[in-house]
Image 1 (spheres, rainbow over the protein chains, first blue to last red):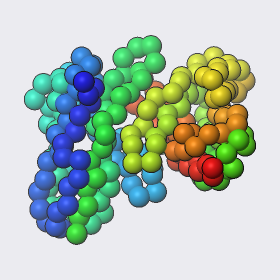
Image 2: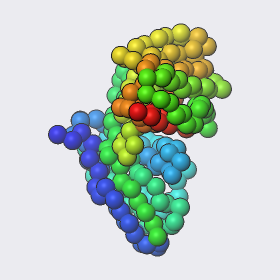
Image 3: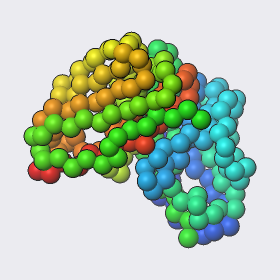
Length: 113
Length: 109
């Protein structure tokens, strides 16, 4: 069984559109995350939710809005997409003691044209 | 924000050669984690180091945490093509992970 799943795997869209990426984890973790990985492979945290509550919100444009309907799901909605939003977006879950090890989803490659 | 710096950015090795990546922080770390990301894949947790001077081994991989807890290294002995990927050191502050820039390892068969 897949521990952390994301859909879609690939997303190609035009500037100005609105899109969503879905994430689900079946590990029973309380905390979920969204990361952005740019073309140079830099991985940066965007958001963190603990039991449906936002606990980390890094400097991210407010066009990005995470939504957590329950602790197993954390979706990412992006409004008015821009060229610079092109990246791979990873969902992750975990953060439990003692290591706070995180489990990453397979990623969603977003291309904005 | 507090960062962890990794060197080198890229490393090409011949299969069978050793490989080392280094991670440095300007501040003392409570612990350091290492993740591996295969090409086209997602980051996968390898290990966490907590104690000053700690050394841990996983088969051909040796992880070290500096005495001052400001640096760490990952050494791979006798690389294989399956070692290809990007290795990240990660600063772990509770629920917040800060990734280093990564070292991309390429192995020529």
